[in-house]
Length: 580
Image 1 (cartoon, rainbow, N blue to C red):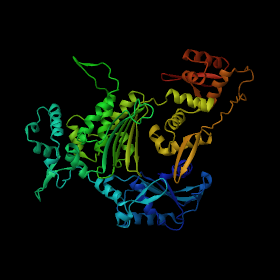
Image 2 (cartoon, rainbow, N blue to C red; image 1 turned 135 degrees about the vertical axis):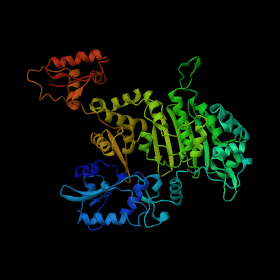
Image 3 (cartoon, rainbow, N blue to C red; image 1 turned 180 degrees about the vertical axis):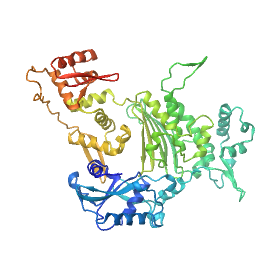
Image 4 (cartoon, rainbow, N blue to C red; image 1 turned 60 degrees about the horizontal axis):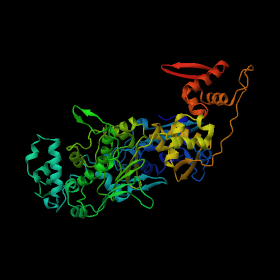
């Protein structure tokens, strides 16, 4: 349920890509169906009727004007009649997703459109998926291409896209050395399994790599079988649109782009099994292996090793092998990058939460699972998050690029607030940086490390709603700490490198008349408490250059307590200080 205050917040802080305003004072806009389709097929959003948007106006207070909805109940009935008619392929709305309210004396209709479940995509209008399916990008709503529509229809099936029979591809196209290596590993993980003693063709059929059409008696390799075990030439004949590429960019010397590379060069059968078995040792070769024993056996595996393997396998099982793109893996000094063609079947937020598993290639997923790689119960990504959290590294970034049809996962092996980042922000913003909340400091550090950020990016960094993030971003822009750049409906933020630190002005108006003049250190602490309500000894250490220990901070705080300016408070095990 959206209120008038919520709408004012959306207009002030809302990210434009997830917000659409239409006049609709006398009738439902003819474009509402297109907007509904675009939001449903992309990442969801809010439609506001009764508000006119002036796209050329950068000032948020002037960008929107109210037009007033006439007969809102009639307009709502028009909307529901349209959504429930054969003009729209699927109604994904509940009653609570639609309503109207008063905003400063004006009537506004609001429609919350969620991202459609993959089973309902594409959501289209006018009974024509090729002409009536829309998506949303930075600039506008656009007609989906024929390839995008076909991809959504294919993804709507739970059976996946890797089990189909490939006409003309037989056992002759299987690389027997690859299959032999896989079967040895399979038997090692499943020593008592009945499949261990059957012939190769039957083994592949049980595995989902080979199939027989019962109605036509045609038989051959499936897409999963060819991609996993095929010979290079056969794979390139059928999947010439896909490349595999591994780049090691660590310890590069001047005038070199990488220190190691694995790609098509004719020296190996570049199927998925060979690719994953070759790159995994390279990826984890430099990771720390603490000495541990399980009984008398040394255990070299760690949570980070498992997370890297999980990321590599996820890239493969979620890739769209019918589109054009690259399975790309990069090893960098600050972490890893995994990239695959195709878009996510589930919303990014659902993947971060875990408990969901919808592989685009379930046959390939099962083949890896049977040799101990990957997970099919939705716990894979939380495993990565947990391992990275235990190392106190920056949270992994999962980005679904709807325009390039590409998914990227970045695993950062740097702390959330690296020392060089904190030093830069301290030097840039001076004492004002210490007056910011922890969320605001994290936003600035992310902007520094990534150069440009967006509302949606910060949502995943902080785990906050887009409106709350918008509020924080707006305040940082107002403080001149961030600068904005608009591309159509999309806004990005970056560090204001020309920021001029304002000299600290101590407000002594409410200090008791008997108070003596404060020294510079005490002034910093007092102003911090006035701005942030509380202070801790650790914050004093971070704030004051001359104080480097908690004990020194306690001495400084006690001076303000003795002067009757601060008082000590306790909440559970936590101690802090506030104005008296």
